Amino acid sequence: MTQTQTGVAPSPLLSFAEARRVVEEYAATLASTAPELLSLLDGVGLALAEELRADRDFPPFPRSTRDGYAVRAADVAGPRARLRCVAEIKAGASPAESAVTLDAGETAEIMTGAPVPAGADAVVMVEYTARHGDVVTVERAVRAGENVVAAASEARAGAVVVARGTRITHATVAVAAAVGRAEVAAHRRPRVAILATGDELVDINLPPGPSEIRNSNSYSLAAQVYAAGGEPMILPVAADRADELALLIGKGLTADLLLISGGVSMGKYDLVEPVLASLGARFLFTGVRIQPGKPVVFGDAALRGKPTPFFGLPGNPVSTMVTFQLFVVPVLDALAGARPQPLPFARAALKAPVVAKTGLTRFLPSRLGGTQEQPEVELVHWQGSGDLMALSQANCYIVVPPDREQLTAGEAVTVLLF
Image 1 (cartoon, rainbow, N blue to C red):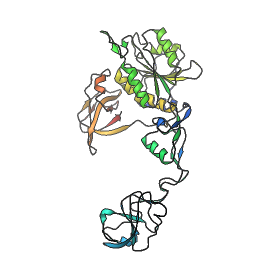
Image 2 (image 1 turned 120 degrees about the horizontal axis):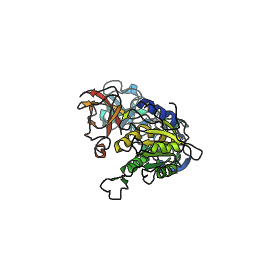
Image 3 (image 1 turned 90 degrees about the vertical axis):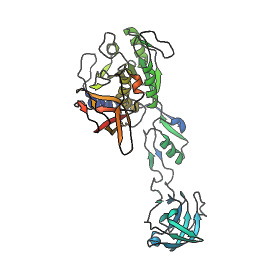
Image 4 (image 1 turned 45 degrees about the vertical axis):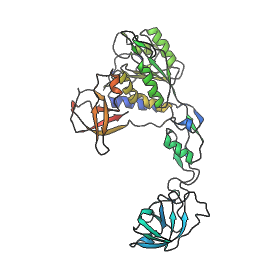
């Protein structure tokens, strides 16, 4: 981790990779929020505070994956094998109904999800058969194990099926339900205080004056916080006065995490860093070589014993959203008890050339489209990091490395998905 500082003396700008590493290393030291027992659906979006284990073998019997006929593979190795159908086995069949043993030359009609009878080792799909009375003609050979899921091949009784720290999604819910869990232990949502700064800001339900704008950042951050598993707590807008800013930052530091938007650049009224320093803050970095988001600040402060991490995010809306995804999410994951996740990068062909200055890693709002075989990406026309409307049309960022002046049309480029 980079050397820390307790003031706001100039410090070297970190590269994107260096800053991300600082955040990840810090996140690894954080304690997660306390667990609570919740009904299964109330836990969606939270992180499991326990392992989920199989309460029996999955599947508990050899399961057919197709409608068709259960066979002995050796019996259908030749062309147009003819077998005698001796039973029908449906999904959910009772033990008595499925207590069938196939001998040589015999088959059983079977449905998807039904237990494969003893003696059979494969299932022929119904479309490859013809039936006349009890005689089934098999028109295609199958290998042993084809269209059959072996008993206990998905999980054995007692095995961990979902790890602690996994975010509860629809897939997790399905597994939990399958192993009979109506309730799960999950970490509570971390409380995230959100503080927007600036004399120009008014709340969204008020008409802005000629030189004012509505406070969109607090609400976009709240949406990002909630989507990332946190509980947003929007504070009143802080005016550009050190006393008021200090008071509101103090309130924000009572949460699990504090996000401040605006006031971190080099202007006369950018007071966030000096006020944090006056409160004894420890700065882990005070700028990153990225665009947008270069002035981003990260550290912690301990007003009441336990240090609270904070981020000072640039006030331009695109910068705020980019830096949240790049740096805030790992800390929020750690506080929420979730296993750390890598950034969702992908590759796509560039539709039109992109020109950029060197020196900064750039995350440019873009639109990913094309086809499954040939994904394509192009820049969204935007007017810089204050262009909120352009970002609403984007679904990813094109990532321009700091040493590239131009990306050419048709080349495969890295994109960061929202």
